[in-house]
Image 1: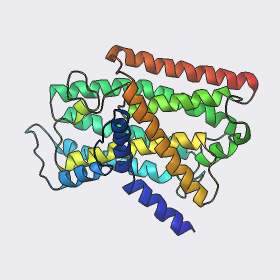
Image 2: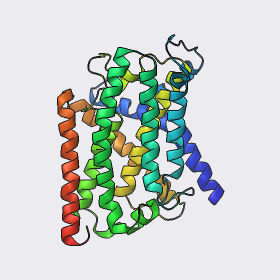
Image 3: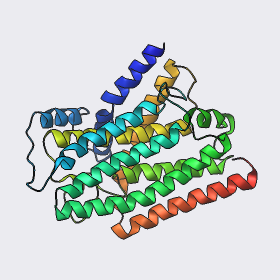
Length: 308
């Protein structure tokens, strides 16, 4: 059973992320009354990019070349310690939740320095935006996770998920609802989805994530495309583990909860991007500060009631 758990975990971690991006694009197309691209279009794009060569600027160093690989490696390591089909991971340990967040930050750091290394003014502008908005997002993320970790008394995935009051989860625990809403806001921000950023735009002056990878091509861009889809999958997985009661052992119910939860978030993102407009750049810090204030209110409710 342990070997099967690890095998399924790795299969979902490695093969499923591009499908999630394709599914979101399909939902957006259906919402607009179109057929849209294939569900497997991202797989085709990654395969095509891996077969191409890469062109590097004369000012680029090994940092630019290693950035996409290190970003993907950091996210894969984060995915190994994040529970998927049950409420704890085989590779989990005490304090793994904090380590998970730092691995995310490490991947973001590698992407930022690779954008700065090439010497492009546009990529430097994107890296500046990414660093600024990432700072606000991490503040909101840590505060939201504190809402769940403080009652459990441990920053460990298994302890946090086990301590959640599943029988009365919902409006009876507004602090948890606040934490879940903030996690959704951080997911949209960190993955450059609407209303924070438009993943389909090609206007350098308004892009955040895409402008950081303008000079990457071929296999390098394939790693970036894959790491972007993996990051979205992991944050969606983290959110649904706070929303759904996963079993403590590998079961069909756990696999069904995982897949239905992730696809449900994919539907939510697709519909949200179809009915909302992008925020102006100066409004994004206000959006993230508002998310942080919501977590503060959640923490105040937690301390006032003694437990969420």
